[in-house]
Image (cartoon, rainbow, N blue to C red):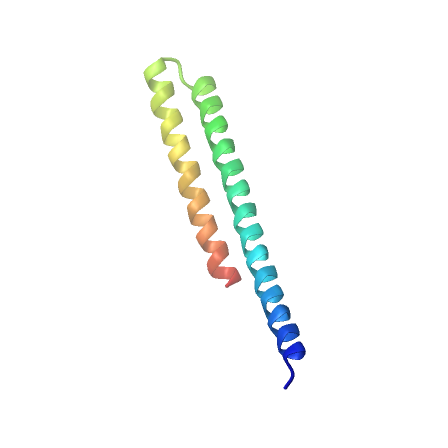
Length: 87
C-alpha cells in the first residue's frame, strides 16, 4: 500500500466527516431560528390578546402571561409529537 492512496483515503474520510458536521450545525441553526420565531410569535400574540380582551392592567398582564404559557406549552407538545411521529 503506498502512502499516496492512504493520504487520499484519509482526506476523503476527513472531508466526509467535516461535511456531516456542517450539515448538523446548519440543522441546529435552523431549529434555533424557527424556535426563536415561534417564541416571538407567542410573545406578540399574547400581548395583543391581553391588550384587546381585558379591561384592567392586572387582568391584561395575567391573561397575557397565561396565553404565553399556553403558546409555549403547545409549541413544546407539538414539537414532541412531530419528533415522535417523524422518528
